[in-house]
Image (cartoon, rainbow, N blue to C red; front, side, top):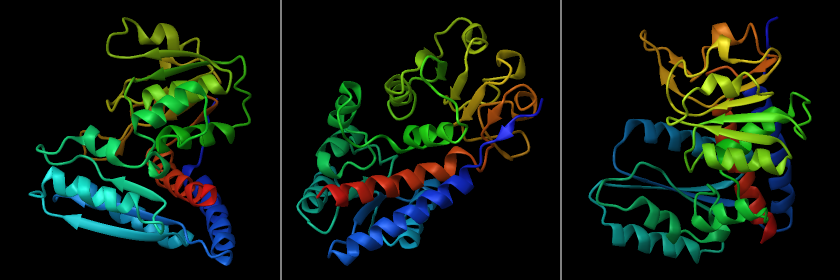
Length: 281
């Protein structure tokens, strides 16, 4: 059996078309969704991510404000700028690109962003809302993963889902979103003795640890849905995920490729969150 590919590029285009239509409808009522993106320092990968986010805003009609600062920017100056954006009614979402220079406390930065504009869904308040099942912004990557799983047609109620990874940005919120969908969820991590013992029972596996070959074919239940969140490089410098794609695709029922799977969805869900912030207000 060869798994059916879950096309993140195609789903992303579909969702962005919907965002563009809803954005146009808001503009007709005098409201233009606005996203502020702040980059501090010269990290090359961060520069690429930010450029892609600003480009996505242009594609969907969302107004973007991009602000770039030297790595010497003080924490106090950054926090003051965030506070000003919090008070700006034309801005509905604020994103500060990570990582930040060492002298800036990232959690303090995240907590300074208004909960109403926390479109990354990283604040303690947003995490608490997710834990309690309350409305709020969902972290973009897990939110995108749920949309990808939806395309398979699998009914998550009663299914066993295994999340490999326990980060605050992906693993933990991913598990909570799966719980909200009535799946039975297991979280595996670096302290798990035998990850395969759990994944071989799983109807859905989400691999999100940032390490190659963490999930191999012998660890997968035939017909399972496999979502690969990892972004790594192989020995030839080629982009790859956490999953042994060539092996696992012969066992799984559905699988996301890398690239072209989860990656495009992360930025798309940022657009969705920004639009929803504007719609709420």
